Image 1: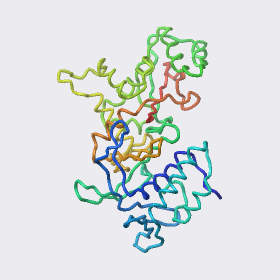
Image 2: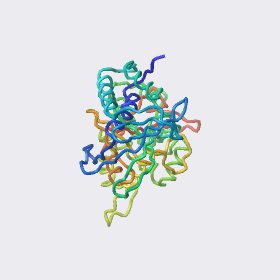
Image 3: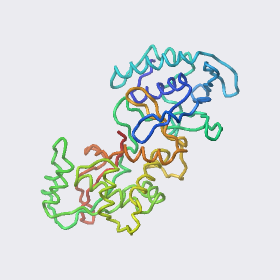
Image 4: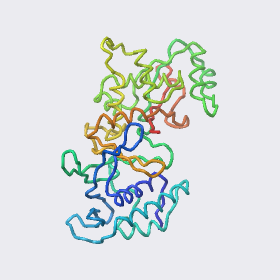
Length: 362
């Protein structure tokens, strides 16, 4: 059966081929520009397949495919991988939805690569042994791959676990009022329309809790104020229409809803949001109890629209966090799922309204 996948899934194979062909990966700055003076030579890429583990070792101008014990299975010139990568990039750009690329699958089979996604139970998409020229050390790192070849990548997926519950206070709504507000269904602004309808009735949304106790605990472990900060971000997005985390953080820094002592101009909100983004990028999942450890301990590999691959190494933590902070934005999820953006009458007679927390990278 032919392998089929979307642009993001095929991007993982593109990353494997491109990196093996080039033998190094350049660091990127916060604006997705290559830093010419900073690159990491690739020693080896390690890949887990259903039928075993394989190492792709860079040796002179060749790629040597080995077993974990060092037995050589195949040796191919690295330049061949670059040609295959270019052909794959062209095919990815020419297709949409889920698609097969038979000519690439033939080459994949030749190099013992039989699936689009390497086996992984965490956020690691590819494991690489990199050489750090600054420390003169080789280190095995797990990286998450984010591709711009398709739609914007998800940093934190929407689910019922990412619902933030708000109480509607200051107004009493009848069943007819509730049904009318919940039926507002303009294609682009239905959430804003529903919130404005509540406000027009004299109501206001007051943060109550993060619905899912696991996600709530994960956030509190990172920082006890994060649930309230995220709630203010969600409300500010609806009020202002601003969606980027950087701009939203700037707004709530000025309004200071948590009442931090700002005499010394400490970046309370930006710091806490960056910490959240980094944790979500490298290890934390909303519905899974998190131990605080990063799975993708290397950082991010970003596949740009032109096929260039940039490395955001966790060793350069400030640059990595700035990249996330400047490129992350809130996206409103579907109102047909997760009880999102509907008024719910609770058993105690109170009214709840749920907003969902979903973050993408542009």
